[in-house]
Amino acid sequence: MPLQSGHVFASHIGHTGKTTLCFQTSCFYAKRHPDVHVLVIDFTEEGDLTKRLLGGVDSASKKADDLFGGVFRLLSHVREKTDAGLLSRWLFSQEVDIAQHAIRVADHNPNIPNNLFLMSSGAWPDPQQMEAEARRKLGTKIRDALEQSKTTWKLFCDTDGDRRPSDFTMIAYSLCMEAIVPLHLNKADLDRTETMLGMMHHLREQGEIETQVLFIVWNCVKSLKDEPCSHRGQLGDLGLELPFTPTKVCLSILDDCNAKLYGFSQDLPGLFVHHEAGMAAFIQTSTFVQRQLADNVLKPSEELGMPFVTMVDQLEASGKKSMKFSSGSVEYDTKDSVIHGVSHAMLELEAKMEAMTLKLCR
Image 1 (cartoon, rainbow, N blue to C red):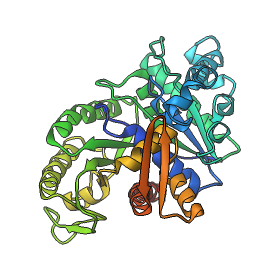
Image 2 (spheres, rainbow, N blue to C red):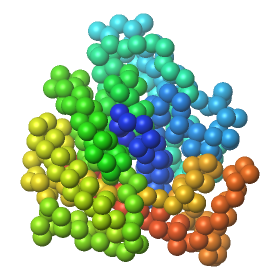
Image 3 (spheres, helix red, strand yellow):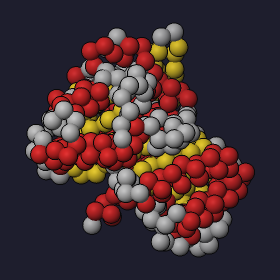
Image 4 (cartoon, rainbow, N blue to C red):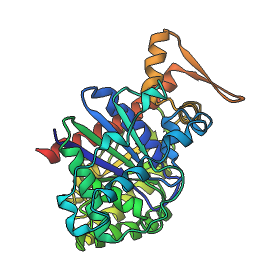
């Protein structure tokens, strides 16, 4: 069975939501597609995503020695299979067994769907620097192993906020044809991201990566009202249909940032999947507006390693109107409407990602 598709969450700015979005969307996808094996590769040096998948920081610290380091073991395995690193013989080497280096997360955290598998970076940096050709061929080798597997795989990769892409981030690019870039809705973040986009365009021109930007996520947007909003702005009759109403200033910043983002897409032809669309169509397809999520849902989700999709399942099974979470000495009390609202916001993101990918595969 082929590798269904691969998405890398990337941004050279830290704390924009890469790990949170990767954690939640991979779990949503696994829940919605039980017949697909979902592989999550955590390419962050500190194993941020791994800690959430294994039950939160407190729980994961007890499992670190045994379970971290899957990526390093894989890199070592691939190097061994290339005849002591002779890249000219790479294509004639034995196949790499991905299953050897991935763990079924549900065996260690029952809150995670049974069909989600993890390979972790190991919470420490890879000491070996890799040349561009080595990275490219390593990515090809891993991707080929997934495509030649008897199982259908879906791939999600998390990366660090590198000012310049690290070896790990470059491997993630080589594995995934589509990138999702989370940003906070402000001009400064977008200005800094122009450098990253330019770097990706240069790498594409050099033939080192093929990754395109599927869409930008304007993350943590402040909500004025919990009501749908039809925002026209610069889009005329097309407009943006939002499931919540952002503040007026957020909508003004959104219009300005979207216009600049469209300009970037025209200056960097081919980098965005939908770069040939007109401005209105580009903004509709290449951006997603994500509201600021409630702390009393987001925090326990991350601290306890419980994705939103599992929270909803447990809430509905209980028949109650609220849920309580304990994380160390911290207690969270959350109403059902808040949990459903947060879950729905993330479900819309996952649905957009899947819909856009299906269109590209046709």
